[in-house]
Length: 209
Image (tube, rainbow, N blue to C red; front, side):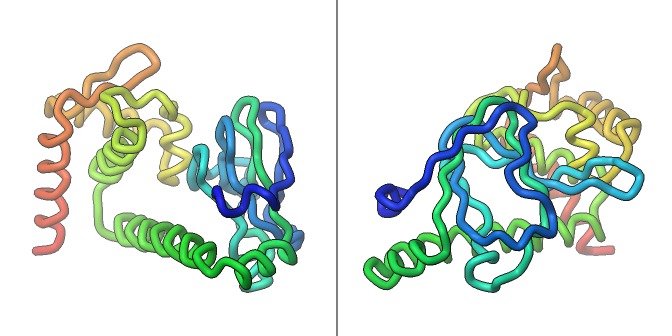
């Protein structure tokens, strides 16, 4: 992001404020500076499906510039947030002058593509409890701590595309196995290595089926 700082247009958003809506053609790269941004979509029944909560230094909107495609997700601020915006023209000129910017964007996109493919494979093959365990492990890794407080059961359900009841049942299973501890408004992971070992074991079992 340091290389792009001279080109950034800073915008402030209130909690829940719309940044971009699904289907919009307005191109541009966005980088979260402060707060967080949730990206997801609303179904025809009004139900919300969360794809990801973006944290500071994470970006979105690259394909609107390089592929000239409309935005596939609705982006909304989570709490008071500050987001930087770079127009397509400025970004392309910057890349011509500093090719390392393109490398940074390519690395970011490759990582997100890999994660998306993993999620698609998980949906096809893994039980919800394993998918939740993987998500909690990833959130724990990103936070660098033992507590996962960023997502409620409703948000976990929307991100996984299942009902809150299924999430509650799966969390109960993980709790009974000693892989998590449910506390007030948080989920604690007492032993990340134990959780990761269980995830790998369940994945291997599915690979053999």
